[in-house]
Amino acid sequence: MIDKVVANADEAIRGIQDNMTLMLGGFGLCGIPENSIAALVRANIKGLTCISNNAGVDDFGLGLLLQKKQIKKMISSYVGENAEFERQMLSGELEVDLIPQGSLAERCRAGGAGIPAFFTPAGYGTEVAEGKEMRAFNGKPHILEFALTADFAIVKAWKGDRAGNLVFKGTARNFNPPMAMAGQITIAEVEELVEPGELDPNFIHTPGIFVQRIFQGEKYEKRIEQRTIKSSN
Image (cartoon, rainbow, N blue to C red):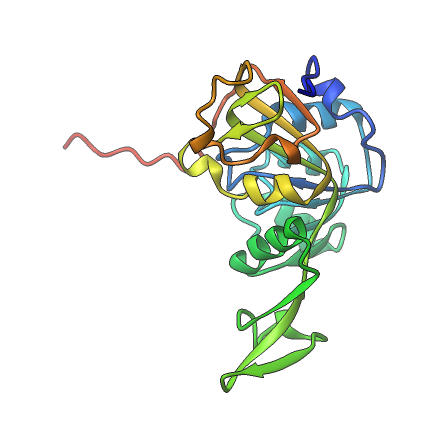
């Protein structure tokens, strides 16, 4: 067994340099690699292209990297709750490639599966289709989308073992498994690090073959973007 454990987030992001492309798992603030993002902020790495469903909120998640102007391009499916993301996009400070959410997920999955491109009907007839090859299948128009890969993929799991096998919890699974497969180097931060053999092999979502570095995170805030509370009246 190859022991893939590193001491902490700062050691895990070793080798990430300016102008690299990163994939970061999560949906909103659910299942985001909080510790790794904080380490990227501390390292002050700049010029990053970030592939992520969205960019967190203004003061958390990828929003922290946006605040420090460490991201030059976002490849994502929506602006979401991040006012700074919206401001930088509209002012031209940030390059943004907005992709239909299903297409984004499939482009990440294709990258991990070694599929270079695929045709999809999503986005046909909109700005998404501009400049892209089109073909009709069964009489329905489709556009060509290319797979996405990254220099580093950074994911967050519920449990993992020293060999890099990962288990995700509930909806925090989201973009994490496909992104874990599509990075040249994949970093996994986990809430609980266990010994090999402790995870039921029938419930492993990402096999350790896709993970190069793993560490146990700490002090997870697990914020909620929009908290809705039922009135007692």
